[in-house]
Structure formats: C-alpha cells, structure tokens
Image (cartoon, rainbow, N blue to C red; front, side):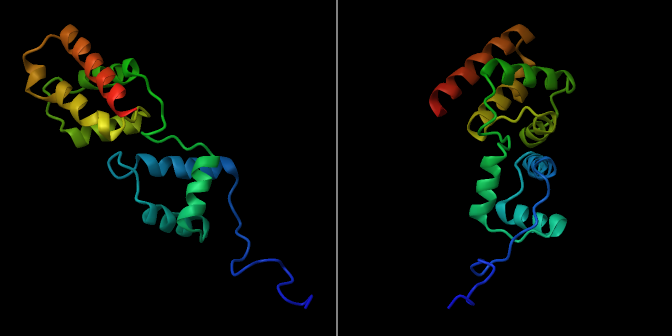
Length: 156
C-alpha cells in the first residue's frame, strides 16, 4: 500500500502562498475596503483566488489572518483618547458637519484609525449630530472622551 497518496496530500494540493509581506498587505487592504467595513469573508476568498490563485477555505483564511496579526477595528487596540483625537482631527476637515456616519467610518478606516462598530455609532453621532452645532470644541472633546470611555467599559 505504499503507492497510495505518495505526495502526502489529502484531497488538496499544496498552495503557493505569496510572501508574508505581500500577503499581509493584501489582507490588510481588505479590512479598509467596502466603506471601512471590510470585505466579506467570501469576497476575501474570491479576491485571494483572483489575485494570488489561492484556493483556501474560511478556516485557513482565519488562521492566516491571526498568524499575520492583521489589524481590524476589533483588534486595533486604540485607546479612547486616540479615537477621540482621530474624530476631532477628521471633524476639522468637515466644518459644516455634512458627512454621515458611513462616510466618517470610511475616512477613519483609510487613515488607519478604525473604530469598532459598537463604539463608532454613538461616538460619531456625538461628533456629527446636531449636538456638534451647539457645543464648543472643548466640550465636544470632553464629551467624546466620556462617550468612548463608557463604550470601551461596556463593550470590552
């Protein structure tokens, strides 16, 4: 029976993966696409198949994402002060407050300051809602910090 499965592959052939740097860059790029909400897992798998001719499954994708330590909104580890600073800096580019929550999330993701979805909606509403029009920048910063610290306490 030594002739059975001489290459040692069970149903799947060996994949030719790109270097870790290129692979990480691709996976990291997928996290900021789709308006900052990342590509779905199925879209990531399709994109990997198209770009690198990789035919892998969900579990393998998750293993590589964890192994390469791909930064996502959930594991970025931003402190409330950093999140508030990113929002206030972004707010300076939109003095009229016309950007919606989706646009703000996308712009934050493109700058690398991704905010987890549990935290982002109430925080962005404070920064971009009617509240902003009636509040000074100093009070806005204090209220953003309070909101982020409360959200971090509740959700982490």
